[in-house]
Each structure stands twice: as C-alpha cells, then as structure tokens.
Amino acid sequence: MEAIPKEVIEIADDFFSHASDEEIDKMLLVYFKEQQYIGAQCHIWLQTITNKNNLKNIVNLYLVIYRSYKYYGIKLPEISLETFRTTYQNLIQENKIHINIGLSSLNSFIEDTKITHQNDLINHVILKLHGSKDEPVKYQTPNDATISIAIATILILLLNNEMKKHIGDEIN
Image 1 (cartoon, rainbow, N blue to C red):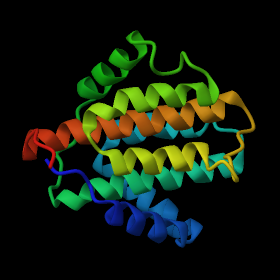
Image 2 (image 1 turned 120 degrees about the horizontal axis):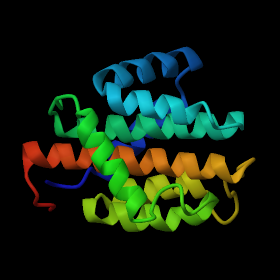
Image 3 (image 1 turned 90 degrees about the vertical axis):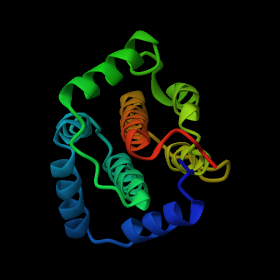
Image 4 (image 1 turned 30 degrees about the vertical axis):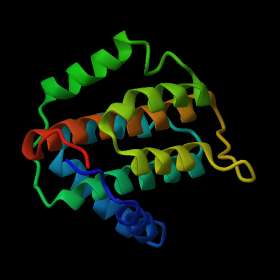
C-alpha cells in the first residue's frame, strides 16, 4: 500500500479550512455515518473539548484524515465495534492513550502511528496538533490536547489497518 501523497493531504486540508461551519457539520455527519462506531466514540470525545478553537482544529483534522484515506478509492466496510474496542484497548494497555496527558501524548502518537508508514499524514497531524515553533497550538486544558491526539491516533490506526486488508501491506 503506497503512502497517501502529501498533495492529497494538503488538498483536503485546504478544502476543509475554507469550508463553512455548515459544510463541516454536513461532512462530519456523512463520515460519522460511514463509520458509525468510530463516529460515535469520537462524538463523545469531542464533547469533552472545552476550547472552541481546539474543537474546530480536531474536527478539521478528523475530516482531513478521513478524506485522505479516500485517496485509495476503496469504500471501506464499516469497521466493527469489536475492532474499534480492540484497537482502543491495545492502546490503553500499552499506556499510549489517555495516560500521557496533554502534548506529552504526542510522542505516543508518533510511536503508535509510525507503523502505518504514512509519514506525510503523520507530519501533517503533528503540525496541526502541535503547531510550529513560531505558532504553537495553544490548548486550554491538557485534556483538550489528550483527546485531540487520541482521536487522531485511533482514526489513523483503524483506517490504515482496514485499508491494508483491501490493498495489501506494501508501502512504496
């Protein structure tokens, strides 16, 4: 499976960064319906984010990640609740998710997602979650950062693993 090209990620990011709030809500609903178990849990997590800017950031990032995986042109079957729970439990047991609080959990994200070989997507997520040296992302609470990173981690792992079932393991 070849990695998602940087251009695909940038096009998705540009599209969602210019979309209206109504368009964002519609696309989020469409993606939540396509993967209802991922959507249901992410919806619960999103409700815990206290800062409006942090919430908008992770919603846009969720949409960019999801749209980026559409690059492969394969409509994924719904990822089962069991698969979601297993992936989530594995991350918890490995002390990778919700244990490291705030931006310190970004290191766990990097470690967990490097197995996907989606380097451009991972770098994009890091930039959006952490920011740059000149413009760091400011989180109102450590929970806002932790939840944002948890959503990005679980989404990438689930979509990547499911896509590999349909395409194969090889990354070019």
